[in-house]
Image (cartoon, rainbow, N blue to C red):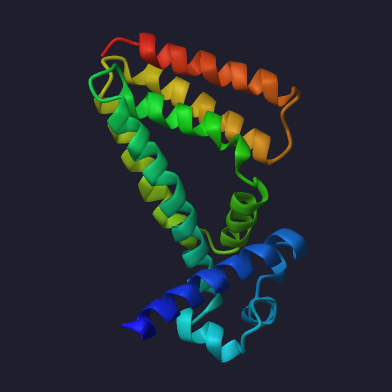
Length: 185
């Protein structure tokens, strides 16, 4: 058993190092060698946990989803019985992600963009959330508009493209959440 724990700790340490390389040096610089150096490991130590650069990037994406999805699920459970709980939960989590280092998801997405197939787990998660949002609403088009507006705000914020500050972004997300509460199921 101690060996499995050590391997898990090594995986997390390697993923931390990969994120750091992506953030500090750019996604194009994420390589098994650069991550091994950052992690203080041999390339073989990285390869033991991630047999390829693609596996490493997949691991980064899985960890990002593993952090984000439970937040939405937990919030959704709190909203059970209210109108559009998945939509409300998703928008609420987007609003609270202000505290997350935006460089992390951007670095992961940039790295994964080098091989679009690596984004498949994210596509699958988005499709599942979309289906949940639509199934909970009698007006799926309106619910979809609220959802993509929130996701768009988050993406524009990550890219540094918002023409306004975080206070206005927060207010817009609150308005979207209010719209989700008022949207009849």
